[in-house]
Length: 225
Image (cartoon, rainbow, N blue to C red; front, side, top):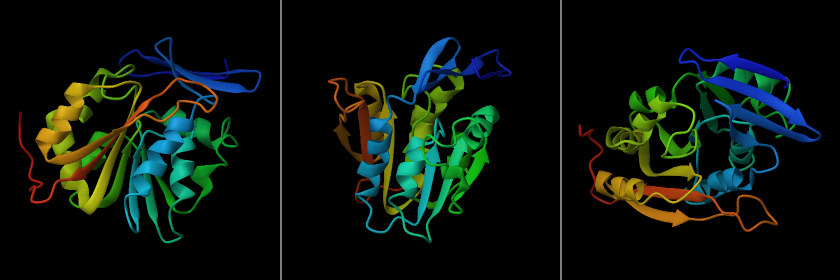
């Protein structure tokens, strides 16, 4: 173990290393690994490829920095990239222990860190982002934080819709398929494509990326359910 921190709800986050592999565990369960990040990079690549000129990007979940790095590698010098991370220790680990894994993305002047819940960053934004990438927890089924469920609920999805600029894209990483979440996106006013990228090149394991663009004529106002 390299470091650990206990959150207010009692969940312990642990940063550990074994040989050349770095892992983060939450509540004793594996949350992320430096050996398996190809689908996180695909999350960024797939979404950004669908936006002609992405200038403002929100990344929900810093992790080990791979998603942020993929965004920075695909956006212009004038882009503004905000990464929201709930756990301050994860930000600190990215500035120290694991900064070299993804090429120290936090050192890029385009990257700005918001230490807090990405739900709050989205809820107060109106047509602010060209792309929203959510790589939070285990996807629509929360693993480490029960409160993450509100991000994937109907109000959270509608908040994402309102926070996107015209032509913007919401992309959500998930460990597996989730038909209920896909329906929720459609009901909220998105056109949805489901892609299953390899979790790691050279393996057969796949993760899921939900790609959602605002359906023509959909109004972005919030709806309570």
